[in-house]
Length: 350
Ligand SMILES: [Zn+2]
Image (cartoon, rainbow, N blue to C red; front, side, top):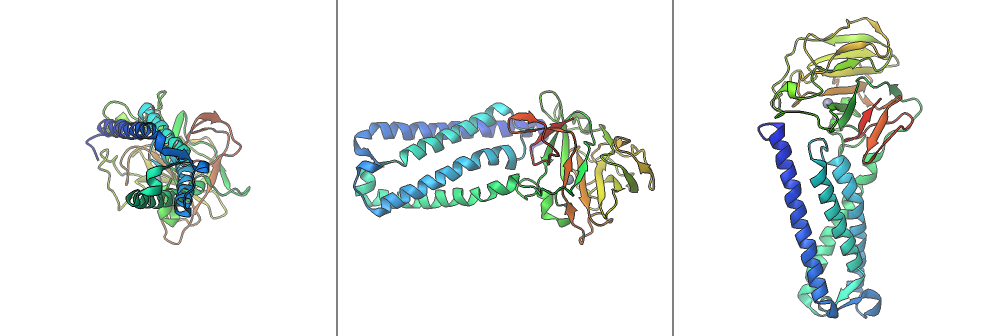
């Protein structure tokens, strides 16, 4: 980890620019070689060759299609996370990789003489197409899972517990988009971070809790409930150094929603909790301020619902939940789906 989030964001951006430049140079060089040797390259339908070449070309073609499908999911959902990467180099890298895959897909329909005649070329092509295509195809198997979410009319529906525009830094059904899902009680948990108008989540150097827009922002009841438990008194962690693994939730409010559903709002700011155990609360009621207490690297709001009351009870299971009345931006446009769920990098507002 870099010294602060600004340094981290710069390093991230540099990495994206460098990768884009390397991949673009490779793609151009490949194009140059193809043009230079075009007299020795023919459309696959016009050559007579063996099944070895046809079969590998076909397998490479399938692998490239899978790669094309992997690109948006990897960069827009799985890769954490878009608020830290400037949009321009990220979009350029996506563009360059798309260009490479389209170029290679077209070249799959051509065969060069050397591939037919040279033993070493055949072995190289065999290795490249088996290795690349197999990894791309395997990666494509995680693609549908990252979008999926239980679709059941009995799922809990919550109001947005915050105001303004926020982003899900970790959320969804799959481990690929939600590290919480490695631990059953926190299945479907989400981490929320507040964004400003430029869709950034911190200002200045991002080394102080106050640099984060989430810190000190009001948290409201996402549903009618009874306050089951309140834990307060843990200080805000130093940014990037938060390792209170003994009290991972820090200051938190636990709400009893009935039907063995217990909702946790965690990492709250010390001394800000405005409700007491046993209170009956109504949706929209002010509860506390978001903070950076517990096991957290930077200020954010953590929400999850368990089927047992003790936090992180290893016998508990995390439960999925949907939202009422929110607009969501996944990839490109703001939409207002009916009872949406969130996956990593989704932005949302009322
Ligand atoms: Zn969390």
